[in-house]
Image (cartoon, rainbow, N blue to C red; front, side):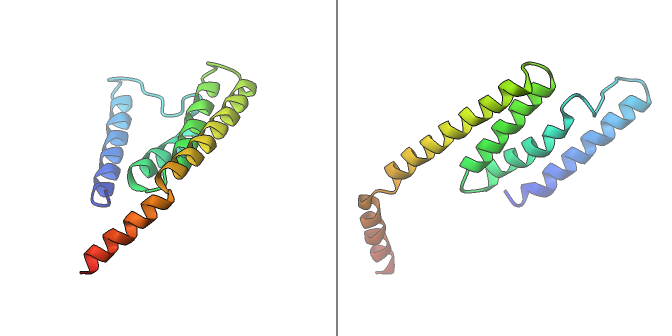
Length: 122
């Protein structure tokens, strides 16, 4: 994914250039500063981390927070509801994380890891 990073940046900059040119030539009118545009500073890094990092729980949480805040900014629901939804998402992700860690990090898997390591060393 590290090789894709410059490509992603290049595509993003080209898209911005096309948007600015289209707006200047009155081909279309795309307003980059829509209600809740600031949530993209939470959403975009979270999406990037989902594809590049090993530990994804935090990335999914911040992606969820960004989307919920964007929806609140777009007046789909109120900020009061948004904070309650964010708390619910946090609790669900913590619970799911605990369950998955206990399923995939059992004592049996440690023994298997030791055996695989021993086989690799031979």
